[in-house]
Image (cartoon, rainbow, N blue to C red; front, top):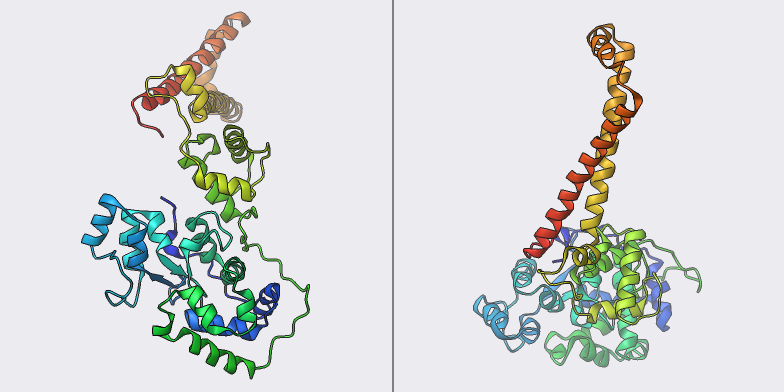
Length: 387
């Protein structure tokens, strides 16, 4: 499962300039954007705890499940077939957490997120390959919420309707046929009339703000996107990616190249829309059977081999530091010299070739210990205990 840290991210709020700047991408001013945001999420993308505002929709969860998972969700009161069957609680997060224990992706898809309450079922139309990627971005910055909104408005082909103040069309497409019950269209019209009387933020086209947190549309290689890609690669069996840390290092590039090669994608180590789409649709890697030969396992599971080499290096380094520390102490402390001198005299007649032989034996012992560590990794794999 993806690590969401209680859904608490940086929670950066919008700057005033972001609203007209992002709105200009679809030819609308800040009054239209303000009206849209105000009605959809009361003008804020985060709740009092710094989490993205959400609304968990049991009927959407229901349609994203089947079989035993659906039965369990219905049993727990987390899913039902039709919208409006039961009232919604004030805080949707407890229900979301329970739903995620049944199916993480389906639960995230069944929730509306952020400033404009984007249903994560629509994550791809909003510019994200997965609902997980969208949620992580929304935890970071309200600017991501608004950028995704504009992307989705264009995808739904209602950007021009917002510009023309066709509130009923916008509300119906965005919220579904139940929009009239909540009067979303009349609320948007009233909100727009209010904001039209308020002085706008001065804005000149092209005065775009560069934000390190913006990752929409998907494909920009900020740390959040890189981490999502790393986690997905690991899920698919590309263990060479290492630990997901959001850094585009050598291990991550190696895993991306391997994935591209095995899925007939253009050779490149960059993260782009094509890679994200392929990762979203990919099946787990064809890893070797548990009874495969050690050499096959070693080749397919690189951390087994790196474990072996790392132990050799660590053993050699520790040995060198230990000898150096003893020598340093012996040269500085009279009491140590008094203790070590008899031993020094005892071994002074041993020829150089004998010392070299002893050092070689120590290195062989370190190598054997490290080799045993590698074999334990292979045995664990063959026993079905992937690490």
